[in-house]
Image 1: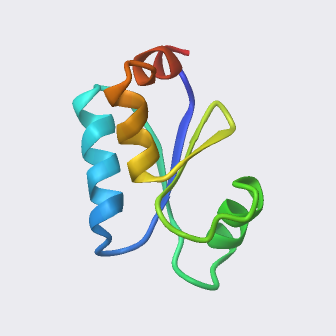
Image 2: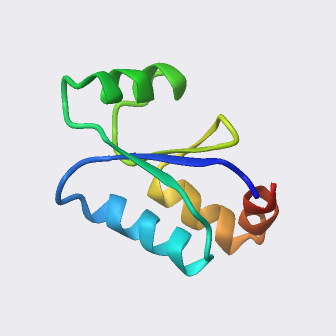
Amino acid sequence: MAKIEIYTTYYCPYCDRAKALLKKKGVAFEEYDAPHGSDARRLAIENSGGRTTVPQIFINGKSIGGSDDLVALDRVGKLDALLAG
């Protein structure tokens, strides 16, 4: 099983959408609260190559982007393979 990390903020519909898809897939993930100015947000920005929006999603340490990117991977049938590992 892949290691999944998601950096989110409070009341973020995109974050909720991404988490809902991951839950639907039945995978465990680590969620980090990453409000503006926080250490978690700075880490997400650094590890994503400069992306400043949330959510930021990482699978096995690789940035896959945000909610739209996660959904796009699922639509083309590539997400399950990434989640497996």
